[in-house]
Length: 256
Image (cartoon, rainbow, N blue to C red):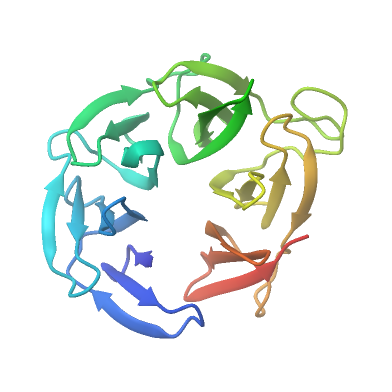
């Protein structure tokens, strides 16, 4: 499922990237996700809400977050079906339960620890903590050029500043400096893929240490290259689907 803010549609593609269907008449759709019930959640920037659709027929089932949502740039589904909406204009991540009831807000406007400035995306990654599975919320804090990590209740765990050249978050490595954080993705190994719009690359980072694992992608306008990439989705089999902002381009890349 790919949102097109200019056209005002959600496009359905099969695994071979053959167009199958379209939901029309949306108003600047941005974030999108499939919830625990199998319904499609679409963040409408123009209508300041989340709209819920049945993927079988495209029927509108519910409207969520009216009066709360301002700019739903990304939607992430967490443990138990909770819905995490990255709201760039509100400088927060809004949390709803699986039945679309509002629960809480994570973050607040600002530059300090736990504060956000135009958050653009978020990912939830599981980790083992002494034999217990816990879930961390990684937020791409674009305006502050950093990644912040919260628990799913909203408590700040780590503030990760942009790593300088040849240094990771917590120790020496060859991690690149962020130029413009744009999107996050998670692969089957729990590694964090950080899409940099200005660098036209995705950097794979160890989600526990922040160390650079590898990078992929290259600037260009030909097929297989990226120009102002907008979003990333990891589809398995070491494949990364990236929408390229130079217009009308979906690139499927393999990563190391």
